[in-house]
Length: 239
Length: 263
Ligand SMILES: [Zn+2]
Image (cartoon, rainbow over all chains, first blue to last red; front, top):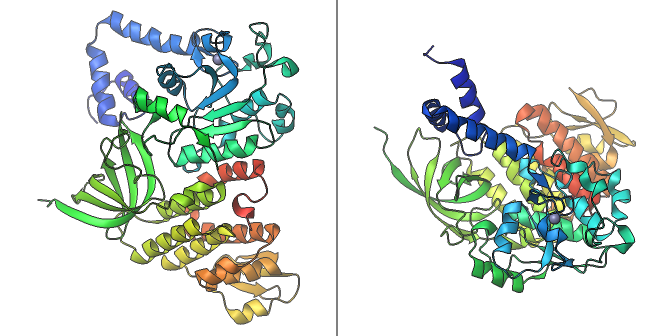
């Protein structure tokens, strides 16, 4: 047995839960925290807490935002007939930075990855279909339990449709003409794209994918703005 | 002192996990060294020289620095032998391909060269890349072939298969053989005659013959279940199960023609 403190060990244990943090790094971080001034530790602790408590998801597009609906969904300058489907909120930010896109978004919360055990039911795929055809939910409800969203994920039902009349309101919602799949060009992205294309086939909506021109295997997030703009412009049908 | 050497070999990518900001930890099934883990630095950068070669199911020529006793080797080069890009062009081929890489990843020991299994995998992925019909037939075939290479060949004997004349027969999970219902093999499980016959073809015939086999969806499901039960009995918890529920979700929502029910 070495000289250890249970609290330090507990912290090491927690750090190892973070992605890319191994035991060694976790120990280094824990030792660092041990030496930090009390106030700084408090600041980190409260930042951690508030990211869970204060941040919510837009109940329409599921982007991480401080308000619901998010600024994009509630803006009347955005074209609600085009939905760009992204894996995570960070991809949305990358596309927004191109200043090329005027439509709205849908954040899936990941991609279908059979090797990781992540399937359509773990993502917000059915919510996407319901945005295109609100009657979809009924038919899919028994087949797919609602995926786990943020603590306030129930917000679906009490979203304020008066914002600018888009989505959620069934018949009065702006019809969606095009769904642009902006998933990463890799096996998981392909699987997700084919799955969504197949799911949306019965609806009168054009499904396109931007991946063309993007380097395969590279992360959308790391693509430069010019490349991303070109990819958005040159989007094509999913075959 | 462990000597560092350079290894150049063909490999199939089994798994890629993002690491840090831009790197990936990649599990390769190599021809020369068997299953091996490598660190591919900067692989997720858009301009990475590894390009698309580190995607699961990719067939690639790799160069890595090898140090015995190290759990992760450092990948230096990777270029496509064949990209198998058509394989990635539809849900049924992707899902069968992913199940194959998952199985190989699960059943292979680290650094245990298995050139026959490597050849089987490449042949299967190649076939998947070029087939449009009955791609689901590959799945039971590959599983039974791999089991055989790992020392648990199903003991399927023609005479005993032909002795199954009624509606049903038995599969022995202990030896993988097919038996008539009046036989008493170890760990028997009941199955329909058509499923047992299709199972026997998958266990004994060559790939071309297996790919010509027409199975009704119900028979295919039964064959897949038999093969799964046999392998699970033989390999216990090593038999992978992760992708199965995901693929079931995909197929449930799918149009006819997706996944295993493809014919
Ligand atoms: Zn929104």
